[in-house]
Image (cartoon, rainbow, N blue to C red; front, side, top):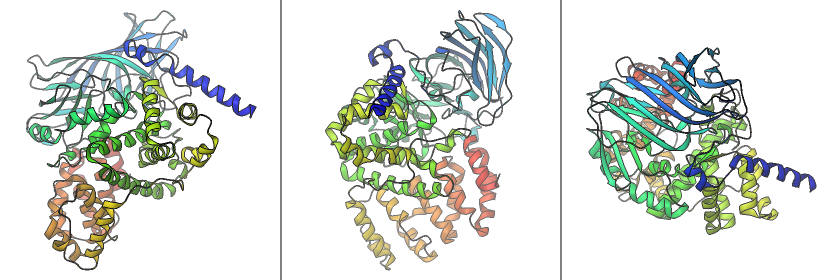
Length: 626
């Protein structure tokens, strides 16, 4: 018992050191958060030198596909280090200046995944470090699109994707989630284009091509973001709006109509939205993920534009990150579930509030199906990758971007809600977001906080939940909660009728949402016959679906069944979609059979250039076996 008290005291002390002052003080005057354990994915020494503020002055060369300029860091060398280290990846360093004086610097040899540490000599009195640099051709964060790769096909486009450790490929920085700083930026772009960042943004283009940005709340480097293109803006309400290419803006505005109400509903659940405006930009097709929660400006895939607002739970997810992730951040990528598990849970609570419990129950069940699939796949290679607390040492942190942190994390929180009661759990989460606002937190520190704030020494309840198995155990715990299957039970009944040779036109599907259709298709036998596929397609026109979630699943089924009628539309789909969630399983299915592998290679060779570098990396392994 004494040993347990000593351990609890020690963890509580680490928690106190990591959290510092109250949230209001942090919001007025940002403070630096250093993690209590070593972040193995940053080569910087942001754990001992305080990087207070970044002034970024860059020029974007759309023809040469290069960013160049300088990053001016204001620092506090409180530990009197003699060496300041910054993360870089494929950057050319022109010169380095310390307090206005040019100094010699050293750039280490590259380390796989991590890049090269930039060493700068500093003293105890050093206040600023300025690095003049240019990006290289292998910048993992940057996707340069030629005009024909955009929606409007008129001007080039650039966007960044800095998560997880890719900010270092376009800014020399301390690139770890536990290191927060404020920033200002001056960005020069061609005069016909507009620039946006994860900051206070313009709503109209100007004549100079020079844009200035302010982010006065502390964020980690993975939330640094930039988009440059022929962009238009539409307001939704007084604090929300949407950006997109001019030919896409009207569709985007229609789809995003309910976003203002989403923010209101999120605030009702867990407190004030603290970032000023909440805007989103719908990017060109090459964006590799569904959405990125860049503060003040969510980056979103065009695959959510379905014409019926049916895929907007993705925006609820990115909005929820304004609390879980952006406001309270995982200290290292091993603690990634603290970002994504909380956000998945919050997303479904928002959707329940807006659409009703039966709707959110479908999201929970589809998420559970994803969790089962992820556990089955990961168990074949590394069972520890099914833990919530990951071990990514020596690996690309993207290896942890599976459904485990999302779905196992959110189901753990769902279990906590059920175990202690919704009112009590909501109070706990709201308190948690306030307590750790603009700070970082480890898994261990969260467990200590949860033990004190939620369980209050209720050992019986803690034992019943089996926290250790959830956080440090493999697979899906036996007490994983399942939701009401009312709506999906009706879908199962209609699927059974179809498999018993009832014609599709006679099925009761008239009021189905996207989620019911996904469940209908997901639970089909592994390979339907060509005749069965044709019957479904003739009635429901799946091959021509404008809903990317349904289309991708249908094309996977088409490859399995050898339903060649869908192949031309599948190729068209792959020419326009850059989201890894869709590309990887579809190309993966084609590569399973010699009959379709040749087609997959041909399609990939034709459209690889349309995909983001991160998507290319994963798809090269699938298609080219590299």
